[in-house]
Image (cartoon, rainbow, N blue to C red; front, side):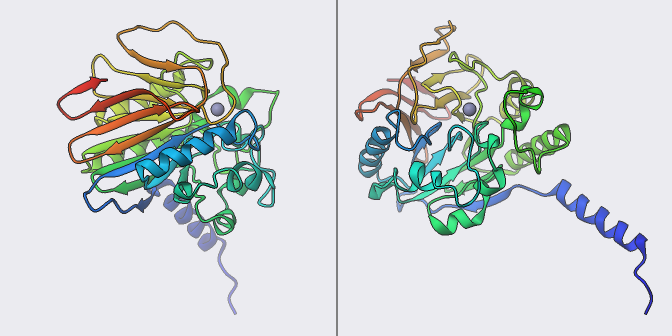
Length: 326
Ligand SMILES: [Zn+2]
């Protein structure tokens, strides 16, 4: 029997690599309500075993989720503090997620991205399908597309964009599947651009863990301002939703329809570190805990920020033609 040629192996490896490089983002479909509308909650920066008011935020999410009749939940990352999950059997998955978000209205699909704290643990464990089997509402991926009715929700893995994590010596990050960094970022940006250009959805929403603009503790993420923001503007994205700063925040644009929404109040908050911002753009800032609700219909998107008592702190309504702050 002839021995296999090393050339064939090399060829197969090259093809496999090429396939990975041009791979498109995985796509999910979510059914809309009978009237075509869609409702969901957004929470970020939460997993602290119920502490720092995580359980109280979860309780109100359950109440509001019930009243709104939400279709799904979005997690904006930093899912498990301080250092992600150790492995698939890490009890933090139950202590910070399954046994916290117990309300019936929250037993819907959760769509989650990773935050920088998740990258400090075993990323592959958090992405593992095993966790989905243990709790069916869990779904966490690096970057993916969710299509529902007239909305396209694009989840983007933002941690690899921030250069400082690659040189930081205080913490270790799990970069498996991410290196080389520049290649990973450039492929991801291409995928995001293509997905947005191919989308015929009326409402285009991008979710990432890190801020683009923020008056909070972390402030702007310059790498995203430089690399991701131009793609969002070019493709007329309506909303950019993030966590990372532990606050609730709405920054508008003076020269585009894009709104910047921070929902990072899932547990520890009240940092007391707020930077000055142009008041024409700063629509709302709340330093405490809470979460966000989004309702989408054919003609309108409504955004609500809730505090820990279930009070609506801020509401914003937008359409293709008019924006109004109520
Ligand atoms: Zn973060």
